[in-house]
Length: 74
Image (cartoon, rainbow, N blue to C red):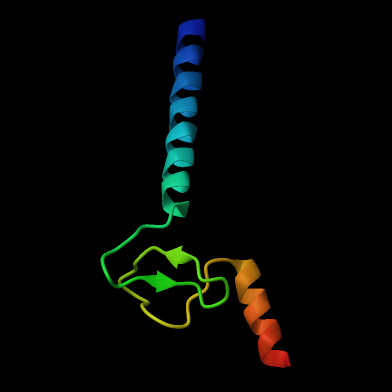
């Protein structure tokens, strides 16, 4: 194998990983919409709009889901 081929493969994989990290970071940033906003029912954090679920009853993280579930037990 040639070193140049290996360098090319390494650079391609680095670019792929960097692209995935960028996409993940963008998905974590809350998006502000006009007057209608969805927010976490536990902490109130503004959440990204989805076509499937809207309005009340959404949580932003597994930690908030646990807090909400613990509140149901009491």
